[in-house]
Amino acid sequence: MRFHVTAISASNQLRGDLLTGDLHTGDRIVIATSGQLSQVRNIFSEGETRDSAAGPATLTIELTDMLPLSVGNIIAPADARPEVADQFEAKLNWQGRDELLPGRSYQLVTVNGNTIASISKLKYRLDQASGQHIAANTLQTGESGICNMALTAAIVFDPVAVNPETSKFELLDKRTGATLAKGEIQHGLRRASNVHWQALDVDKLSRAAIKQQTPCVLWLTGLSASGKSTIANLVEKKLVADSKHPYLLDGDNVRHGLNKDLGFTDADRVENIRRVAEMAKLMLDAGLIVIISFISPFKAEREMARSLFAEDEFVEIFIDTSLEVCEQRDPKGLYKKARRGEIKNFTGFDSPYEPPLNPELHIDTESVSAEQAADTIIAHLNAAGK
Image 1 (tube, rainbow, N blue to C red):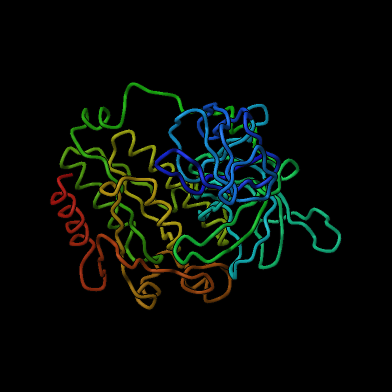
Image 2: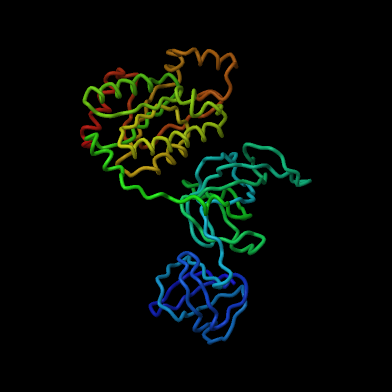
């Protein structure tokens, strides 16, 4: 039995949908999200009191205990509880116009509520005709696959073999709300129940206090040769000269170590930014001023990065330089190679760049020098009290 709460009255009567199974007065039940136990005192259907009901049906029920409940809760038999986890394996049917990109975050919608999810690993694609498992890094429109998913908050679910209704979910575009995929949960991942947050006595504020600064992330984005690295380097030097504690994560440098296994496909670019954003979060937690100099071409990944931080901790800085000027500068000869077809998936040519719409700072390097740009960033930090 699974009962989904859709409304709660002042008298603590619960309106909802009996998704599957049978419900009887006197049944011992559990609130799946909290683990609290109670019993079913009354069942109401179409204005009448009943001793039992069979799903699917819309009902009102009353429990013997006054429990803190909210819309979206799942009620289940005390001896047949659903799973609660933030990681699971799922079968995914991709419907988006653009390809699925592991690591990109999407809105996940289930009968239990909404949260943010990403595909942590695409295990394989399913051949539509034979069902054969085919190695794949992404899914195109109409393709299906098996993947591992990670959520920002745990959800209540049943594996599809146990209860198809509570295994279903949809993935939506976070900006437009368009449905990108439909899926069903195969099973929770063991690591979801084995890995827990460890409470630590020293926190971010303590680490920042000994450095006598307010940690933040300065995220510089722009085309190759726009001047990001030069400006970022100057900002770090100025902060050190002011006795601050910064650290610069440069796109090229990180690809020599942490991200040396990644290429330049859209999927790899998404993973590149995901790792750097998580690294920046750790460094900010250490009390540092973190300077990020990455092309970071996709809005979705910059938004994902921003979502990891408090509102006043993340400063997006658009280093705005036209493709023509970047190509004229070409300090590493990359644009010449791209023109000759020697570099594939090069931003601005055969891979898109999506400029920020509302960055905290918009710096046009065709009209100001790198020194002036760095001073603008420092001035912004000072004005914000950092």
